[in-house]
Length: 193
Image (cartoon, rainbow, N blue to C red; front, side, top):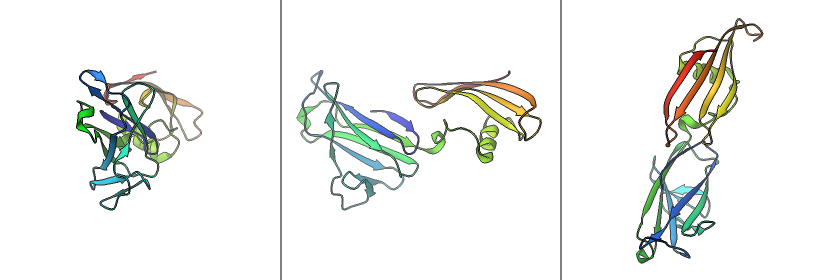
């Protein structure tokens, strides 16, 4: 497991790859998953899809082996949850079934990744986006937006206009950005277009 950054409301497939003596541990029925919300240390109740500090009906959910042998999965739907960090722990109830347990990862939901791939149309969103890269002023439009498979903005054309009609261009910039394997921004360039 690793750290994943996703937008609020997305479904993230949690994957645990079980190994026993160097081989894939297949056919296990005791691979259990629990999810803890970091802000209050409440655990997810798989029975009613809520976080609780006690009274769980199903705090540890059996993960299902699908597709790749030895790979156990659960689809975690974050719809309606708050922006937070969710700690995921996969374990086997019989510790003799796998050598690489427990497996721990985290899902960072929301924060700065929410609506990154949304059309920038509201004035509040435009101002925030412009402030981030240092372009100030009104009457600016972002277009030709490109995103990688992790929904990171990789390029855009930013056009500033003379007035609110957005008809007469004043200046244009080409924005390019790159990210590391953890979807963290490594660099960005802003060049006159």
